[in-house]
Amino acid sequence: MELFLPIMRTSPLFAGMEEEEIRAILGCLDARVERYPKGAYLLRVGDTVESVGLLLAGGALVTQESFWGSRNIMARIGPGQLFAEAFACSPGAVLNIAVAAEAPCTVLFLNVRRILTMCPTTCAHHSRMIRNLLSDLAGKNLRFTEKLTHMGQRTTREKLLSYLSAEAQRCGDAEFDVPYSRQQLADYLSVERSGLSAELCRMRDEGILAFHKNHFQLLATP
Image 1 (cartoon, rainbow, N blue to C red):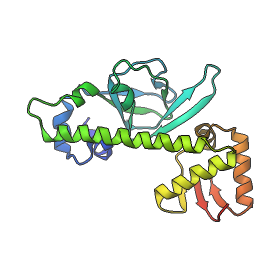
Image 2: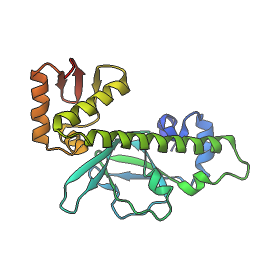
Image 3: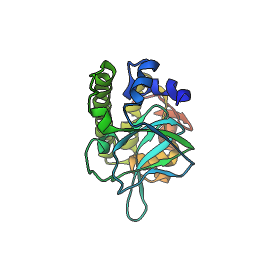
Image 4: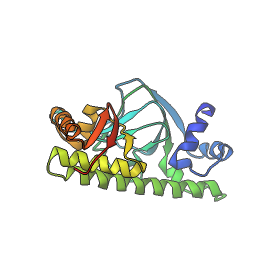
C-alpha cells in the first residue's frame, strides 16, 4: 500500500490530503488491493458493488456491450481515477456496464458505506473525502452529458468534430492527445472504425486538422 501513496494523492478522492491523512483514513474504509491480468474483468454486467474502485496501476475501459457483442466505450480509466462510484452509492443497483483491464491492473477497493459514514471523531479528512466523492460524481455526470452531446450528432464527421472540439477546449490548446486508439474512439462515438478513419483522412486532406496516432492538431474552421 505504501508504494501507491503518491498515486492516491493524485486521485480526486484524496484531493487536498497529505500522505499521513491518507494512511489514517484507509484503516477506516475496509481497504483492499486486487490485481488483474490484461483482459480480465474488474467488474461485470449484472454485478452489484459496495466499494468504489481506485486504479493504482495499469489501465481499464468502462464499456457497455449488447447481447450481440457490439461495444460502446463509456470511459478510459488511468492510475488515480475512480470507477463504479455511482453504483456503489446506490444500494442494490445492478451494473449495466463492465470494467475490463486494458493492461495489467492494480486496484484499491474502498467500502462506500465506510466513506459516507462519519468516524466517531468526525475527523476533518473524512469530511473532505465525502466532499471529494460528491465532486467526482458531479464531474463524471458532466462528462457523460458531454458524451451524449457527441453521440447526438448526426454524422461521423459531426461526432468527431464535437469530440475533438471538446478535447481542445479541455486542454486549452489546439494541439492535444486523446486517450483512445482508433478502434476505441470509434467505440466511444458509436461509429464504424473504417468510417471514422476515412472521415479523419478527409478532414486532414481538407486542411481542417492534422493527426498522428492519438495526437491531434486542429487547424481551420470546418
